[in-house]
Image 1 (tube, rainbow, N blue to C red):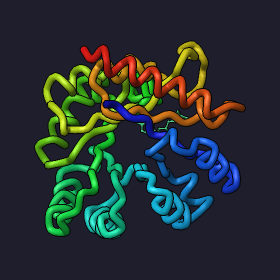
Image 2 (image 1 turned 180 degrees about the vertical axis):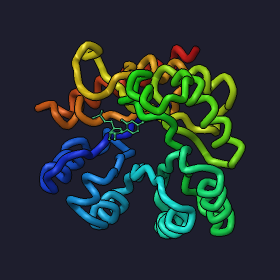
Image 3 (image 1 turned 60 degrees about the vertical axis):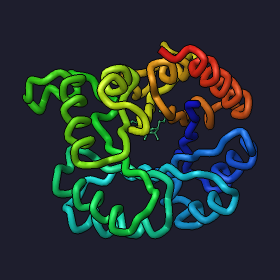
Image 4 (image 1 turned 45 degrees about the vertical axis):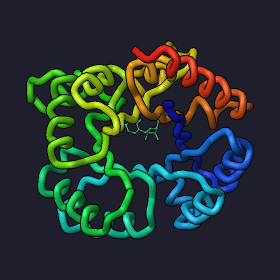
Length: 236
Ligand code: C5P
C-alpha cells in the first residue's frame, strides 16, 4: 500500500517537534530536508529514529563525485531509510554511491531526483535544450535505473510512464500533492491528488504545506490516508 511522507519544512524547531507529536502514530515517514536539518541539526534525525519513524532525507545532492560519495557514506552508516541525489549530477556521481552502498551492504534507498515539480516547460526553456519535460524525465529515469538507483522523485504527470517501464520494487515518490486545493496557487505547478497518485502507481506521496499550514494537521493527514487507501483499492 502507498504511503504518506510528511515534509517538515518549518523554520521553527518547536513547531516541527509539535507537529510530529500531534501527528503521532498516523505518520511513519518524515521528509527531512535542508530547512528542518538546519533548524534542528542532527538532533532531528536522532529524535525521529528514537520514535521509530522512517526518514526520507531530501538534500538533493548535486556536487562532485568525491563530495557526494563521502556524504553518502555517512548517510549509509547512519542507516537513513532513503535519500535524494539529482540524476543530472551524472553517471560518475550516481555509480559511485551505488558502489558504496553495495560495499557497505546497507538497506538505505538511493532516490534520484528528476525534474523539480515546480518546473514547467517554460521554466526550463532558458536551457534551450528543446526537449519536453516528460521526455527529459524519462531519459533521466532510464539512466538512473541502469546506474542502479532504487527509485525516483517525479511529478504526478510522469508516474504512469515510469510505472509502465519499471515495476516495483523500483520506488516512485511524488511531491506536488494537493488535496482538494488543486486550484490553490503556490510554487508547485505539476500537481496531483493523493488518490490519483497512488492509483497511477506511486509508492509514496510527499506532502508539506497542506498539512503543516493547516490548523488541524491531524485531520488533513487522516483525509490523505483515506485517499491513499481508496487509491490502493483502485490501482490502475
Ligand atoms: O509544501 P509542499 O507539499 O509543496 O512540499 C513538497 C516537498 O517536496 C517540499 O519539501 C519540496 O522540497 C519537496 N520536493 C518537491 N519537488 C521535488 C522534490 C522534492 O516539491 N521534485
